[in-house]
Length: 368
Image (cartoon, rainbow, N blue to C red):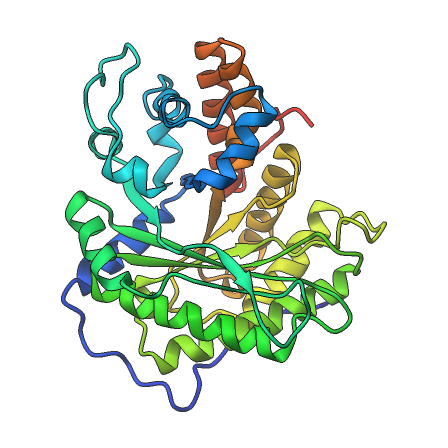
């Protein structure tokens, strides 16, 4: 990984897609998501996923508690719109909930609050992972394609301008398997084409899980295999790359590998993977925090952007964040303890530090 090759060539069979009804809007939105110093708040936890987080801080998983927590985030003081370009929501947040806490936004729908603050609303559209038959018991595919076009059209009418779909990959000496790589690539490509048809920028999220015992080198190989297949299938489905965002994992060794990578090593590995697989037509890449700590997520993002600044030709995309736990975790505990203002301050601080990292200007501050 000592040097980075030029950005990957498009497959020989690639043909520029025919113009989409919302083509210009898709392009503008994909660029706006990667505006300098800004990134995404991932607040799209499903009812099942947020249950674990609420219970961890001593709260019951009720609709009122879910609404109140998101109310606390979306109505926070501190001008977090200076650091957040978009918010990924869950369906009940986008379609149903209104603000009820005492603030200037009380009584307004969450989607209208997001838009009023100059932030782009988005929505998670997949229906979760399921086991992939005839392969490793841990490998999965993602469901939710049935009825997706109609749902996406409804979300667009409600105000959403981007969507997100997640597939997962496990890393071992034999995985991700060829079947998992190709199945998930096809699912992501079909989703992306449908999303663009409805006017929503697709955020394609192939999460390479870090819960394994493999070294950094094996993680690099797994990322390259997954991403290469995805962009080949995206081209086959004539997805408009200029109206697409990739949500990528930072390339790290497995959390059980005993290997600790420095921010510079993570940046080197991550930019290497992207330069081998992601066409320069893609305007924006956002990084998930996965199982990383708040501090590591921000430090690694900063190092990635420092790497980009040292060699812009190797990384022609905007490189920013799409953080969930890294922005919300500590703040949620303060909210659960009845410390609303402290909670809001904690999440806005983490948004600010993440925005600094997205510009390669983070100088510390986030507790380890």
